[in-house]
Amino acid sequence: MIENKQHRTELAELGEFGLIDYLTSAIKIKNKTTVKGVGDDAAVLNFDTRDTLVTSDLLLEGSHFDLTYSPLKHIGYKAVIVNLSDILAMNGIPQQIVVSIGVSNRFSVEAIEEIYKGIYLACTNYDVDLVGGDTVSSNSGLVLSITAIGYVSRKDLVFRNTAKKGDLICVTGDLGAAYMGLMVLEREKQVFKADPKMQPELQGHDYILGRQLKPELRTEVLRKLKELKVKPTAMIDISDGLASEVLHICKQSKLGCNIYEDKIPVDTATAIVAREFSIDPSTCALHGGEDYELLFTIRQKNYELIKDLSEISVIGHMTEESSGTNMITRSNTQVPLTAQGWDAFLKRERSVVRKKK
Ligand code: ADP
Ligand code: MG
Image 1 (cartoon, rainbow, N blue to C red):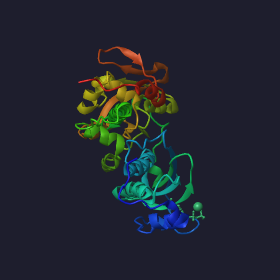
Image 2: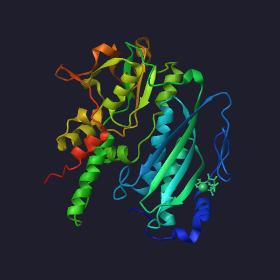
Image 3: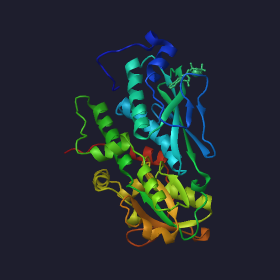
Image 4: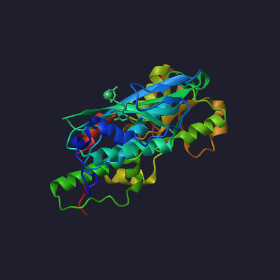
């Protein structure tokens, strides 16, 4: 486990209230919507006439993160990002988070503090207040639950079920990198398990490892779209892979789609590592997941306004439901777009081992 080795303070030395105090005493409230933060029985928030958005994620050690290769600070950071990403996907502005942790005495105060350093860094980077939480002991590993709260004006609100036939399908950034980052981390873990004298080979993989361990939000893209007065007709964040998210929009909007494989943005670094693992780069983008990019649809008439934004790729368009959900491959054949799902995919690919040089 990665933590500060210099000093270990036992949780028992501080006790529950001491720990809460230790973790939250430096909080400075940033947002006007926060009336009262940590310290009372409940936080008090005020959103005036705007709609309030609430979303929650529960992360379990072993299933959602692995302490052998995820630094604690990154776990805290990513846990916040994953939640704020859901607020963004509603076209909302994140304002607060509530953090609940279950920890065993396997963890020291310094280890919990590392998680909180990551949590606070995300709060600073994205202007969010930590306004409360709960602290309990757990004897089944680390549990981290975060609830994010945000607001949106009714006119800006974007759902998944409101895409229209003919709308263009857009994605931000590039896809599949977080998945390849995970593959490299898993591979090195297996190598290490087999022979603890082997050093992990992580150099040269900064981009994909960063995308796996420290994802960021696309707040800038949403800001630019607002500036251009382009309101997405439907939107979702990409947590489970492009295919699964496109299908959510299609199903909820009762439409079909045509996605063009050659338009799916994949970074060169991702493609190189994918080939090393004998995985098709498009497969990483379609089924990898954890990219936390945004997938959205816009009216065709807005194409001219967004076409020069380098962070946005147009990858296809919405069709009638009866046309089905399709991908047009590089070789120009039409195949059905199916959601392989993150879990099934992970199980199949996790056994990949490092090739002997
Ligand atoms: P209660 O007994 O009412 O649940 P607690 O003693 O658990 O109150 O919490 C006291 C205050 O500290 C509350 O404002 C709560 O939201 C906050 N808090 C508790 N645990 C955490 C945590 N892990 N992170 C941030 N705030 C916390
Ligand atoms: Mg409590």
